[in-house]
Image 1 (spheres, rainbow, N blue to C red):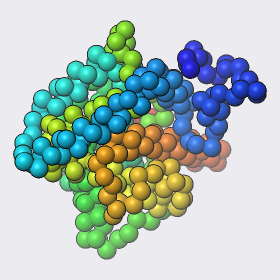
Image 2 (cartoon, rainbow, N blue to C red):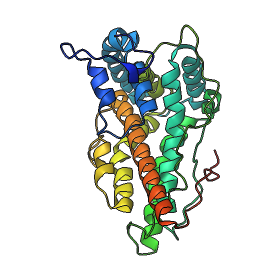
Image 3 (cartoon, rainbow, N blue to C red):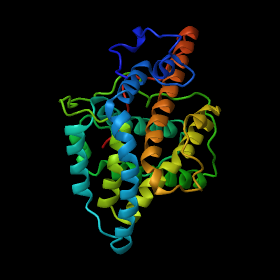
Image 4 (cartoon, rainbow, N blue to C red):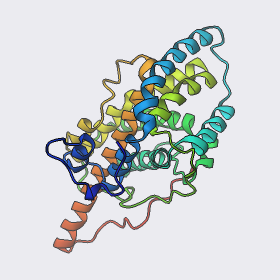
Length: 311
């Protein structure tokens, strides 16, 4: 199905309802209308309908072949070439919506982690790579590998700091939403050429075996298993909010039960969409807090600008 120019003006046919439009008007899932429209537009691309069903089994077969190669050469890796190859492919073949989602993901992840720290006063952890990218070229500096390392190091450092102080994660007296951006990120220079037509789900399936090939066996295994930590981050946020919904918004299963690497591409899509939903839920809560404080004339925490989070 061809995506409409404006999803909000879609004329639905009750005798032949469109599944995508039903998902668009559904509001139970926290996702901004702009992001949801972009996601559905990307999902309507021909690549998802015709290329993905073919490429997914081929990509998974390649993962098995790569695993056999890695059993002989487990330590071989070339991360620099990997990231150059990924960025080249993103620029030349991947859709504008998909490229925007990828850049957004780094910003969203950085803000969620910063939100957790901001609501645990007195907890200090070692500097991490809180990545806030604006262009695809910035991804060349091992961005995808650092993103995974950052997640493990964040959870490890946070828990060691909590243990050292004999603390646990509890709701603060007043939530601090300073780190959460309510609006667009300064993403720019997104290619929109005639060849930029591969949707995000197909692109991720294609890139997963490439990611595996250019990383060591240990790097790839660790990267795939970082997806198991979605629920962990969601539980941290849920404890801070005293709200179970964040855990419902993500679904990569239990962190102590690793999955096969064969489904890494599909689970990475879940990871990205779950991050979008969790961040937007925090945006909604931020708006609700601001409205309540404005109504009661209480001073608000300054959230006009994002904190200085370095790359």
